Image (cartoon, rainbow, N blue to C red; front, side, top):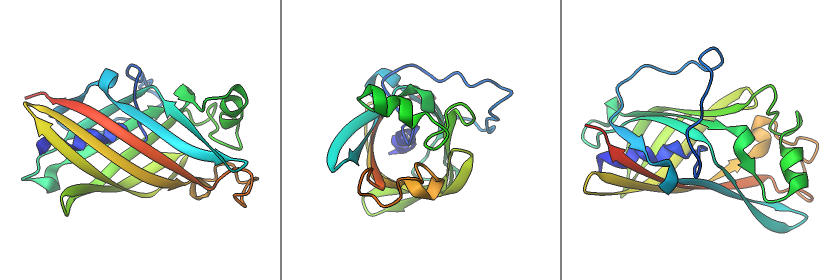
Length: 196
Protein backbone atom coordinates (compact mmCIF):
# COMPACT_ATOMS: atom_id res chain seq x y z
CA UNK A 1 0.00 0.00 0.00
CA UNK A 2 2.89 2.31 0.49
CA UNK A 3 3.31 2.72 -3.18
CA UNK A 4 0.10 4.61 -3.36
CA UNK A 5 1.52 7.98 -3.76
CA UNK A 6 3.15 7.27 -6.92
CA UNK A 7 -0.04 7.76 -8.45
CA UNK A 8 0.23 11.34 -8.54
CA UNK A 9 2.99 11.73 -10.81
CA UNK A 10 0.49 11.77 -13.29
CA UNK A 11 -1.76 14.14 -11.71
CA UNK A 12 -1.63 16.22 -14.02
CA UNK A 13 1.41 14.81 -14.60
CA UNK A 14 1.68 12.44 -16.97
CA UNK A 15 3.09 9.96 -18.76
CA UNK A 16 4.57 8.17 -21.64
CA UNK A 17 7.70 10.14 -22.24
CA UNK A 18 10.78 10.91 -20.23
CA UNK A 19 11.34 13.14 -17.28
CA UNK A 20 10.77 16.86 -17.36
CA UNK A 21 13.98 18.84 -16.96
CA UNK A 22 12.81 21.96 -15.12
CA UNK A 23 15.48 24.63 -14.87
CA UNK A 24 16.56 25.24 -11.26
CA UNK A 25 16.06 28.97 -11.66
CA UNK A 26 12.44 28.59 -12.77
CA UNK A 27 11.13 25.87 -10.45
CA UNK A 28 11.84 25.51 -6.78
CA UNK A 29 11.59 21.89 -5.74
CA UNK A 30 10.61 21.00 -2.17
CA UNK A 31 13.11 19.17 0.00
CA UNK A 32 12.07 15.76 1.32
CA UNK A 33 13.25 12.17 1.11
CA UNK A 34 11.46 10.11 -1.54
CA UNK A 35 10.77 6.38 -1.32
CA UNK A 36 9.09 5.76 -4.69
CA UNK A 37 10.24 6.44 -8.22
CA UNK A 38 7.89 6.66 -11.22
CA UNK A 39 8.38 4.30 -14.16
CA UNK A 40 7.61 6.74 -17.05
CA UNK A 41 7.35 4.09 -19.78
CA UNK A 42 4.53 2.34 -17.89
CA UNK A 43 2.71 5.44 -16.66
CA UNK A 44 0.30 7.75 -18.46
CA UNK A 45 -1.55 11.01 -17.98
CA UNK A 46 -4.36 11.28 -20.48
CA UNK A 47 -7.51 13.35 -20.64
CA UNK A 48 -10.84 13.63 -22.40
CA UNK A 49 -12.65 16.85 -23.29
CA UNK A 50 -15.32 18.00 -25.74
CA UNK A 51 -15.35 20.35 -28.70
CA UNK A 52 -18.53 21.09 -30.65
CA UNK A 53 -20.22 18.31 -28.72
CA UNK A 54 -17.68 15.68 -29.73
CA UNK A 55 -15.33 13.98 -27.29
CA UNK A 56 -11.60 13.98 -28.00
CA UNK A 57 -8.63 12.52 -26.14
CA UNK A 58 -5.19 13.88 -25.40
CA UNK A 59 -2.13 13.32 -23.23
CA UNK A 60 0.89 14.94 -21.58
CA UNK A 61 4.12 13.07 -22.21
CA UNK A 62 6.67 14.73 -19.87
CA UNK A 63 6.63 14.88 -16.10
CA UNK A 64 8.63 14.48 -12.96
CA UNK A 65 7.50 13.60 -9.44
CA UNK A 66 8.80 13.39 -5.91
CA UNK A 67 6.94 10.82 -3.80
CA UNK A 68 7.07 9.89 -0.15
CA UNK A 69 4.35 7.47 0.93
CA UNK A 70 3.69 5.18 3.86
CA UNK A 71 0.15 3.91 4.42
CA UNK A 72 0.92 3.54 8.13
CA UNK A 73 2.21 7.09 8.47
CA UNK A 74 0.01 9.15 6.17
CA UNK A 75 0.78 12.40 7.96
CA UNK A 76 4.40 12.06 6.78
CA UNK A 77 3.45 11.18 3.22
CA UNK A 78 3.59 13.76 0.46
CA UNK A 79 3.87 14.16 -3.29
CA UNK A 80 5.08 16.91 -5.60
CA UNK A 81 4.46 16.64 -9.34
CA UNK A 82 5.54 18.84 -12.23
CA UNK A 83 4.17 18.50 -15.76
CA UNK A 84 5.65 20.08 -18.88
CA UNK A 85 2.58 21.71 -20.41
CA UNK A 86 4.28 21.96 -23.79
CA UNK A 87 4.27 18.13 -23.94
CA UNK A 88 0.52 18.31 -24.54
CA UNK A 89 -0.91 16.44 -27.51
CA UNK A 90 -4.64 17.07 -27.95
CA UNK A 91 -4.87 14.94 -31.07
CA UNK A 92 -5.19 17.72 -33.66
CA UNK A 93 -2.81 20.41 -34.98
CA UNK A 94 -5.25 23.29 -34.43
CA UNK A 95 -6.12 22.17 -30.90
CA UNK A 96 -2.46 21.76 -30.05
CA UNK A 97 -1.54 25.27 -31.18
CA UNK A 98 -4.60 26.91 -29.61
CA UNK A 99 -4.05 25.17 -26.26
CA UNK A 100 -0.59 26.74 -25.99
CA UNK A 101 -1.78 30.36 -26.43
CA UNK A 102 -2.04 32.91 -23.58
CA UNK A 103 -5.84 32.55 -23.42
CA UNK A 104 -5.59 28.84 -22.79
CA UNK A 105 -2.57 27.18 -21.12
CA UNK A 106 -0.15 30.05 -21.77
CA UNK A 107 2.85 27.79 -22.30
CA UNK A 108 5.29 30.63 -22.96
CA UNK A 109 4.79 32.35 -19.60
CA UNK A 110 3.76 29.33 -17.49
CA UNK A 111 5.44 26.25 -18.98
CA UNK A 112 4.77 23.93 -16.03
CA UNK A 113 1.78 22.65 -14.13
CA UNK A 114 2.47 21.68 -10.52
CA UNK A 115 0.54 19.66 -7.96
CA UNK A 116 1.72 19.56 -4.36
CA UNK A 117 -0.09 17.62 -1.69
CA UNK A 118 -0.85 19.15 1.69
CA UNK A 119 -2.40 16.02 3.21
CA UNK A 120 -2.96 12.45 2.12
CA UNK A 121 -5.82 10.55 3.74
CA UNK A 122 -7.47 7.17 3.56
CA UNK A 123 -10.91 7.14 1.98
CA UNK A 124 -12.78 3.84 1.90
CA UNK A 125 -10.62 1.38 -0.03
CA UNK A 126 -8.49 4.15 -1.56
CA UNK A 127 -6.86 7.46 -0.75
CA UNK A 128 -7.24 11.16 -1.42
CA UNK A 129 -4.40 13.61 -1.88
CA UNK A 130 -5.58 17.10 -0.95
CA UNK A 131 -3.34 19.91 -2.07
CA UNK A 132 -2.91 22.70 -4.58
CA UNK A 133 -2.81 22.58 -8.36
CA UNK A 134 -1.03 25.41 -10.15
CA UNK A 135 -1.89 26.11 -13.80
CA UNK A 136 -1.30 29.33 -15.73
CA UNK A 137 0.27 30.82 -12.59
CA UNK A 138 -2.90 30.30 -10.53
CA UNK A 139 -2.71 28.01 -7.50
CA UNK A 140 -6.01 26.57 -6.22
CA UNK A 141 -7.13 23.78 -3.88
CA UNK A 142 -7.43 20.44 -5.66
CA UNK A 143 -8.26 16.95 -4.41
CA UNK A 144 -7.16 13.79 -6.14
CA UNK A 145 -8.88 10.52 -5.15
CA UNK A 146 -7.00 7.41 -6.24
CA UNK A 147 -6.83 3.63 -6.02
CA UNK A 148 -3.62 1.73 -5.38
CA UNK A 149 -2.40 -1.81 -5.91
CA UNK A 150 1.03 -3.01 -4.85
CA UNK A 151 2.82 -6.24 -5.78
CA UNK A 152 6.47 -7.17 -5.28
CA UNK A 153 7.65 -3.63 -4.59
CA UNK A 154 5.77 -2.13 -7.57
CA UNK A 155 2.74 0.06 -7.12
CA UNK A 156 0.05 0.91 -9.66
CA UNK A 157 -2.04 3.98 -8.97
CA UNK A 158 -5.13 4.84 -11.00
CA UNK A 159 -7.38 7.87 -10.85
CA UNK A 160 -10.05 9.65 -12.81
CA UNK A 161 -10.84 13.20 -11.78
CA UNK A 162 -12.73 16.13 -13.36
CA UNK A 163 -11.00 19.47 -13.75
CA UNK A 164 -13.10 22.64 -14.17
CA UNK A 165 -10.94 24.63 -16.59
CA UNK A 166 -12.51 28.04 -15.86
CA UNK A 167 -11.31 27.90 -12.24
CA UNK A 168 -7.79 28.43 -13.62
CA UNK A 169 -8.90 30.91 -16.29
CA UNK A 170 -8.34 28.44 -19.11
CA UNK A 171 -10.20 29.48 -22.27
CA UNK A 172 -12.38 32.07 -20.55
CA UNK A 173 -13.63 33.36 -23.91
CA UNK A 174 -15.42 30.03 -24.31
CA UNK A 175 -17.19 30.12 -20.96
CA UNK A 176 -20.62 28.73 -21.83
CA UNK A 177 -19.55 25.18 -22.61
CA UNK A 178 -21.43 25.01 -25.90
CA UNK A 179 -18.35 25.07 -28.15
CA UNK A 180 -15.65 23.82 -25.79
CA UNK A 181 -16.69 21.77 -22.76
CA UNK A 182 -16.11 23.22 -19.30
CA UNK A 183 -14.89 19.95 -17.78
CA UNK A 184 -11.67 18.14 -18.66
CA UNK A 185 -11.49 14.61 -17.24
CA UNK A 186 -8.02 13.46 -16.23
CA UNK A 187 -7.24 9.74 -16.43
CA UNK A 188 -4.11 8.79 -14.54
CA UNK A 189 -2.13 5.59 -14.36
CA UNK A 190 1.16 5.68 -12.52
CA UNK A 191 3.49 2.75 -12.04
CA UNK A 192 6.18 3.24 -9.42
CA UNK A 193 8.96 1.24 -7.82
CA UNK A 194 10.10 1.45 -4.24
CA UNK A 195 13.56 2.97 -3.82
CA UNK A 196 14.45 1.72 -0.34
